[in-house]
Length: 131
Image 1 (cartoon, one colour):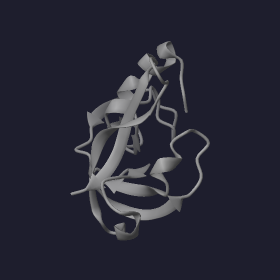
Image 2: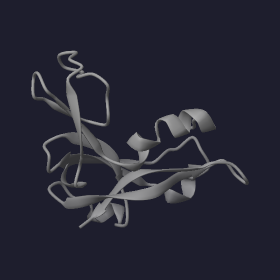
Image 3: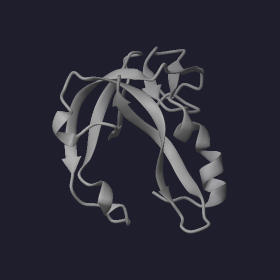
């Protein structure tokens, strides 16, 4: 998803770090920084940065993209359960698509998503690579 430059800078913390929101009332955790708990609506939340290490629970291969990055297909997208107990969806990189498996330990890395060529914004974000 491409954002305008102001939109991108407003959400950059959620793009560059795995921040966990912890509710002070119900105790539930959710990935990404949020002003209120999505479960109970409480505004008593705390934030903690994730260590970024987790396990692949499920994954799928994507064979189609709408942008100009077809050279990177197939792309492996997985559900990763982080050590803090929350799950996040992300691309699995730095490994052949045939070698990805459930239960594989991965760590979060900052990688390029896409760029507004030739002189536009380069979008970076969190992906996962094998440990």
